[in-house]
Image 1 (tube, helix red, strand yellow):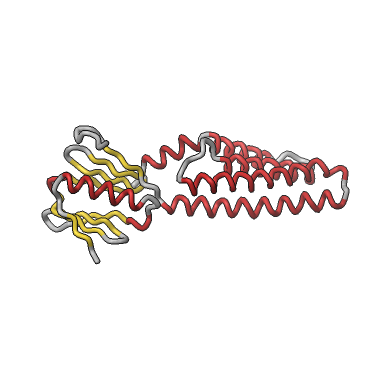
Image 2 (cartoon, helix red, strand yellow):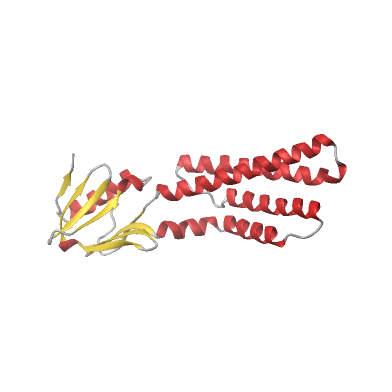
Length: 216
């Protein structure tokens, strides 16, 4: 049910660039995990008793990362958000195990690896809150008197409904033109929830009797 227009109606935008950046990070973590698993398997194959527990930790940490990738992938396909950032938690564990490995071979503490690992794990633990904050920085908001568009931490604009003369949309952009000919646009091809954004904007503009043109 549509909210009364004296209230705010907000649609969060799902920017595919965030997903791509996270995918690149995940690939980087996966490469580290593969290297670590190979190192652990080699140590076990040699039967080096002094390194056996380190090798088991390496293989276990690598396996945990790949399980976390599968969990994250399932949530992404379903369009849902996990309560925890399992990839970050597993990646932080990898860093700690890597620190243990280097400490074992070098014979000294490598505090940076442990601190980094702990920080990454904490990011994973609070992933739900961080994701909610990131989504809040990219949104469409309609009130009784204006449209507010947030496209990032330092990107966005707001337009009073009375100043929007018409809107034009195609497969890539949704453009608003005011009475003096100035235009503001939203890049639709950057949005994973593109269809929802179009429907939301169409509904509000139609309600305000602002004409919408569909470009060919």
